[in-house]
Length: 158
Image 1 (cartoon, rainbow, N blue to C red):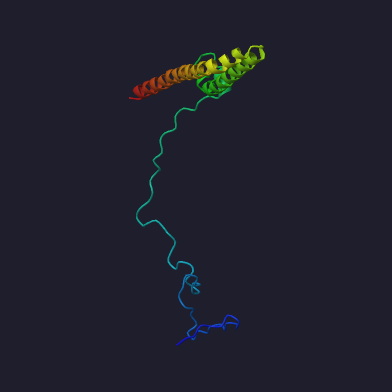
Image 2: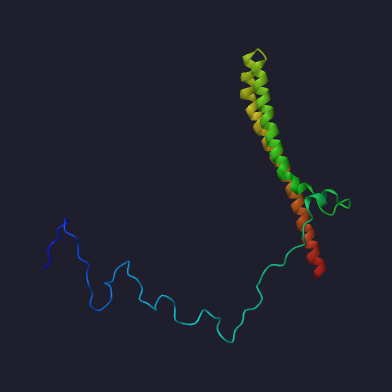
């Protein structure tokens, strides 16, 4: 029978006669068993890998600068400009609304500032909505153009 140890007395290290430590979560691996002893993961004999099945790369798109100076209009600069145009439009709409409200309050009649604050918000929201709709329309037109060009090249390949 074992008795609980007194915490004031130092604990004696345990000795194991067979040279192995007791099993547990933190047991060290035995020497010689740390690494796999078999061959590395070689491919099975008699088989070899074929070429990878990657999609064929499409034609390289010209750069934005090249599209700007393409006088034959074979490539378009507008799809690249759509994102920039949207961000600039949002900034301009926000600044216009802010300036209208500030000028309304600064006019000497606070009613104008309050009117611009309340009535200008729906106007700014509609401006954002119509700007987004127009730019999405342009994006769709250019995607239709790209899809028609792709269908045309597939038809010529047959």
